[in-house]
Length: 99
Image (cartoon, rainbow, N blue to C red; front, side):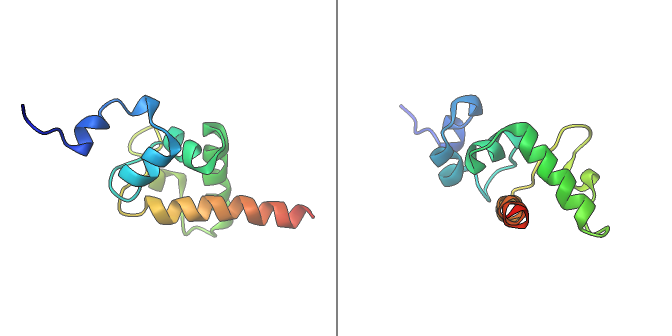
């Protein structure tokens, strides 16, 4: 019997929990909006809308194409942790602005 790696266990990513994504994938693997949504406790559409808002408010610093490889959104392992923080804090900032 051979050993199985963590990556083999992650082959079927559809049933991963929030904790598994944070522990095994964040800053280690490319993430999708669906996986971001699980971590941020929101839905995929909200993640995409936050990306659009981040891009529109960045004064040209970010473009939606920066977060896409072809058509779908994909978030690189090198910076998905900081992007997660930006998306999470952008929602908090929006909530504060509404008060």
